[in-house]
Image 1 (cartoon, rainbow, N blue to C red):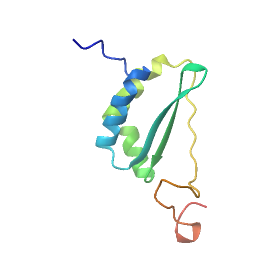
Image 2: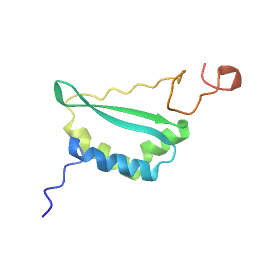
Image 3: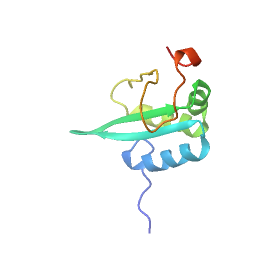
Image 4: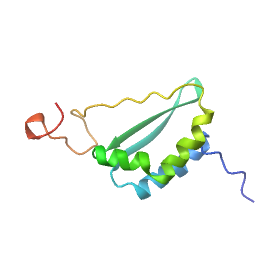
Length: 104
């Protein structure tokens, strides 16, 4: 008999969220969850989107709206969200240079 289902805000629910995002969001290039060492309830999410349209599609996807609604009451503080301009790296598609219409 299966055990109880994890609440969406619980770390055990993360694999199901990642699977749903991978299946429904082709513009989400990376969606990775990380536990914070020595802070068992803290999580860091690293997300990379093909473009702003893909990010907005993610934010408004029903499965993401549902997760945010369920997890927000469990937070002990405001989430910290930062946006970065892509630079040189490995493992992701190349980003055009500013001369080619990429970020400055």
